[in-house]
Length: 340
View 1 (cartoon, rainbow, N blue to C red):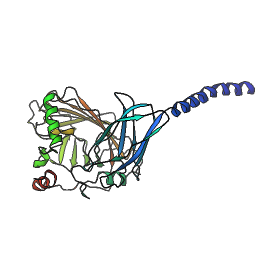
View 2: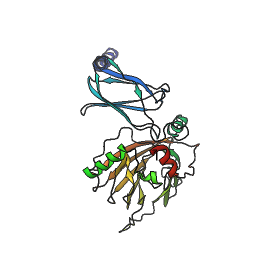
View 3: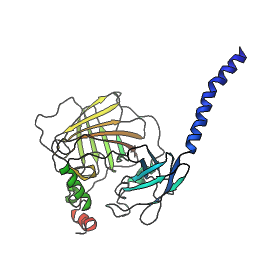
View 4: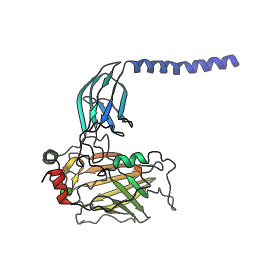
């Protein structure tokens, strides 16, 4: 009996050992991309998400740069890769490089020098990485309210989707978006002290104030707040278009689902794409633990997009922070950023 048991155990273990050996041999035939991310002054950039994708539409990988700016993405199949880094807060512009040939068993060295974004590297103008890294060690279970619902209350460091799919704008919208990027966002609503980015996908602080009948979202951009009605009401039959629209919410299990219509057409979507009053946004918020908030957004506008666009983000808790008063200084913006 004992001998047969040991034999059965050996037979069961053999396939596992074979799979491990096969995996090691497979990894040996793969390559890697490594390098260092620095700012325009040559200082290391920590916390940058480096994405690679096998072209034209193959497997993808990613890594986050260390305190010294180093990154390594391993186990890459041989082939032609595109490397990219999404915008980091308001400090660094997005980075992209194609034509990186990875060969089996070799490591390709690719160092990255990011360029300043709208804040031109001014200290104190962008707190994104500082706040995110400051509270990186927080952990624990997600809290709940007295009625048993997930408690989303608190201050959160917003974050863009670091591996978002490209949107599919209609030609007229794509033309305007290209122009907006080429002229350094000169025509942005925010350049005129108007609400410019109504989708919750910015690297700013957001604060949830949660009650059973109403959730208020505060943020450090115009118009600074929005209401999410949780009392079972429907959208108005003929909503008066506004900057943040009309939002109603409900709980689906532990997920807060927010449905918004009634936007005006004066703000922009992410990546500087214009939209129409047909814009319809669905947000899903889920708090898997104390320190993280998963935010999934579906953006649908048949007047500007060929198909709905999805964003998937993870916000991080920033318990020592508070929403501050922000005042738009239009003349300052134009003088510093636009050179006018």
